[in-house]
Image (tube, rainbow, N blue to C red; front, top):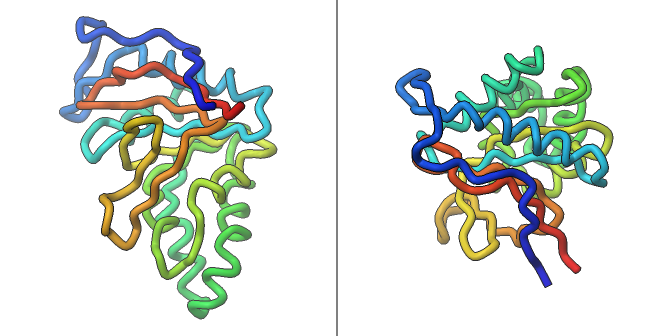
Amino acid sequence: MIGFLPVARRISPTAMSVMRNGVIMPEPIQDKIRDAIKQSEGLYHRLVLLVGENGSGKTTAIRDAAHALDADVINVNLALSTKLLELTAKQRALRLAELLGEVVENSAPVALLDNTEILFDHNLQQDPLRLLQSMSRNRCVVVSWNGTIRDNKLTYAEAGHPEYRRYDLTETLVVEIRQSIATGPVHWVRSA
């Protein structure tokens, strides 16, 4: 059985908010991210997903978190594509996890990953969520995830798209960002 355990309060539409780069970001979003990072401390996978569609404010939220944590945001597309260029297609699929591990290893105690689309490239034959979970065993990893949550399912891309992925939310910390404000609770889902 799967269920949600709320670990942070909902942000009401009337929450105090500020305009950043044309996106309205409620002040409490950083509180939600900070709460999720704290919640991850005792978990096997210390993964926090910032889930939202294009234009929802994920990049702004992760940059603000980086500023608050005095850390850098890792542009995964840029960091990995540079390393993958020299490899054959087969080597890319085989070494992707190792190369991502190298990128994350050099980050602050909390790794902040943005622009993760390369992980979903069907030519790399990877399970992006499992890959991110493996990166989060020894440190907290906060990842912007371009997708949605519906009916307890985490999705990336639309059904029929080559990069489409759909996951049951189990033992995953999620901060859901909708329409430029974080409206959903931070939740931790555990399978029983």
